[in-house]
Length: 403
Image (tube, rainbow, N blue to C red; front, top):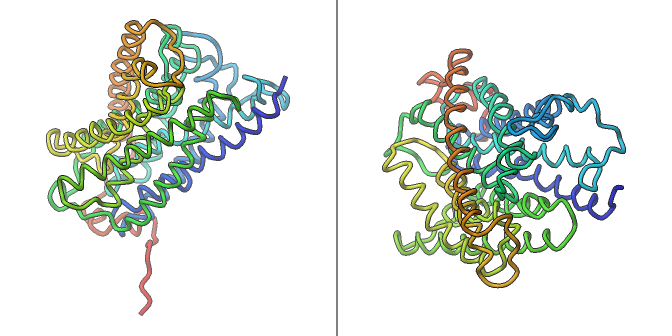
């Protein structure tokens, strides 16, 4: 039977999560690049959202949520052929469930865009994103959320620390390494062309994340309420912590740094939003900024990889951190949820999931990227990179000067 209250909340959550890609992530990433590349980022986010939506309808949903196999869903729901208007799943119309999960399948490959901006061929974006959603995201979603082997092991991932952030973060690192750095990297990279746009995008992400995390309860209940509170507190705490780090290190807290902290707090609380109480969320957010700040520095300065917009350092590191600390958050303060396993066994299961998913994502992404390079090429010509992708790839410019 369809529950009207839960359905109304899930309709709202679905809209909020789609907002996170269009326009939130597009604006967040668009403001971080040079002015000559802003439209390319907006086009990439829009195209990935459209492409992955259609692929989700055709194959992705069935591969993720159809059947009870250990490794991959069956083909029973290809093209949603067996879904009637009144089919129910988890107490809501299955059409709403499909759409809610689709928004996750859309934003995850869109997150990876941040690793290769300003130098990739548009055709490569489409090929990589489509194949990645089907061959990396869908299997991992089945493993964790679709009744696969990690779910049967007792792994907990409330809203996507493993399925979204670890997969995207590790895959972003692989693609950034394979496509090679921008020609100005590391010393000639210009600052974000529009910090105000970054802030607007981050603010929309913050709001949309309530649908991402609280919506993952798939019900209008106490779990959703606590997840929303934990999400907000983690983001707020992480924002202040990142500001403090920059204030101490540089003497001035930057706007871009502050909202980067916001995203780090949101990514880190995502897997644990179902078990963390208020105090745990505040502490986790502050720790997230410290760890993710170090992760961003390590990728660029130690690994020398041009992960342009810090997808691994913020999303990958944050998602893994929240996943690993999840078992211990129930011990901090009031309002904590319940674990699937005993404390030690739960941590072991979480660690296995992070390691296996990271390795799988890395290997699969390497193969996908190699194949894409063979089919359409990865990188634009050097002169096109210098001129900017807005005009050379799309025939438009983001800004026109009136003389």
